Every structure is written in C-alpha cells, then in structure tokens.
Image: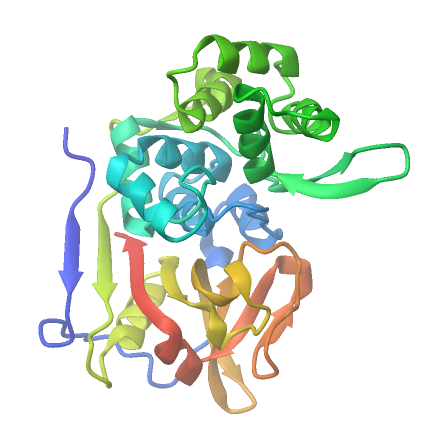
Length: 327
C-alpha cells in the first residue's frame, strides 16, 4: 500500500494563492487535541544525537494521527535503516560511522509510514539526556549516543568501569522494562547485528504492543526545496501551510540563530508552529529540540518554558533550506 506522495515544489512552479502578507497571528497548536497541544508546548530534547529530523518529523506525524508519538521510536528506526552509503557519509563527516547522527525530515516520515505503526510518546518517552553517576561525587549528562558508543566499546571488550556504568544507567533510563545485563548479552551474542538494529529492537519491544497502526493512515506530505536563486517563495509556501493549520517541519542552517557551534551551528531541523507580528515585524514561532536552552542570537526571542523561539521572517528565509508538511 502506498503511504505517501512526495511533491517537490520550486519557485517557478508554485503558485501561492493564500499569502499571509498581513502576518495574521496563528498558532497551529491551538486547534489540536489537548494531549497533542501539551506535547507540542513542552520542551523537546534530542540529547547527544543528531536526531533533530526525527523529533521534527514526530511533531508532524503526531498532528496527522491526533496523538503524540515517540521521537525515540521513530528516530531509532530511521537510524537502523541507514545502509552502507549512509555509514560511509557518517565516517567522512568525522563521527566514525557509528554515532546516530543526521537524517532527512521527509525521509523520516516515509520510513515510519513504511514501518506501518508508530509508538506513543507515553509508552516510549523521548527524553534525550539523563544524569549518569560515574561515582558518588561525579555526574555527567549522557544520552543515546553515549549508550551506543559504550555498547560499541563493550562489544570490543574495551568497556571500562565508567563505560559499564553508562550502559547500566542509560539502559534503565531509556528501556526500563529490560535489564542492562540482557542488553549486553544480546549485543555480545549477536555480533553481526548492527548496534542501531539492536537499539531499535529493544526500543520497539517497549511499546509496539500499544503502537498506533498507520496502514490505513494517510501520511502524504509535501516538501518545498528552497530555490538556489534569491527571492524564492518558500516563506509564502510556509504561510499557506500555516493558514491551513498545518505544522511545518524545516531543515535549515542553525548558525543564523546561534553562535554556540557544534551540532547547534550546523544543519538542523525544527518545527514551525505559528507566526505573529512582534514590534511591527513578522516573526515565526519555531519548536526546537534543544530542551529549554536560550543560547540564541540577539535577534531571536527565546520561549524557554516551551523550548521554542521566535525568529524574524527575514532571518527565516535566509536560513531555511527545505520545508515539509503533511497534507
């Protein structure tokens, strides 16, 4: 069964009939079910992975099916599907080919639709970072990337005491229904299984029996690639989607909003949830996946309690590369 259709729009082919030239105030979340609205107004944290695309895709899918779904489930599945060329690309970019990094928002929607079900957020929470006590006096923050790296070291018989503590505590945090001993036993006894596959299998086992079926759900999406030339209509396309009360996922250069660097200064994905005029200038409200951080540039207005920020339309048009929404 076909679950999606991909529509690539260009400035020459796209005719926007509903331009929001007056920047009328819209918050898409206000029209959503209460639990979805709460989900979308609560800070989201991707932790130490590059799974921003998965968190943004999860927002769109949650709106489409009317219930909050797990970004951890969606992202671990996407990561498990990356093949040889994706691994090679990771190695070239310097993360060794094993750390769960990078992805594309439209592809993430396609992958979960192809899987045929999505786990609920309440059954597999998507908190990305946890406190790990290496000793009674030493605490570090760690997440899924640290867990996968530690399992890699364990598989190589190079896991020291601190490594073992990370596996023990992070397994309990991410997968409370299983023991770290069972996870390590599986990883050791199934050396040919990719760690990404192992992580997805254990994540899936936590929630699949309560998952939302997608086989009869339309997850048809449209995606708009920014034209190479200046003056494209990508913001008008976003306005048209917002006017139809659709959340808009965007892939963009985060260096326009932060000077922190690292993952926060490179390719990133987030969700546009609304717009309004602030000080006479049209701004767009973006739900981010960096927890409640406010490490933004002066022109960006942080909404700490929602894990979101307001960005001027001019900046949005400069930084965005692609917009995607589910029809």
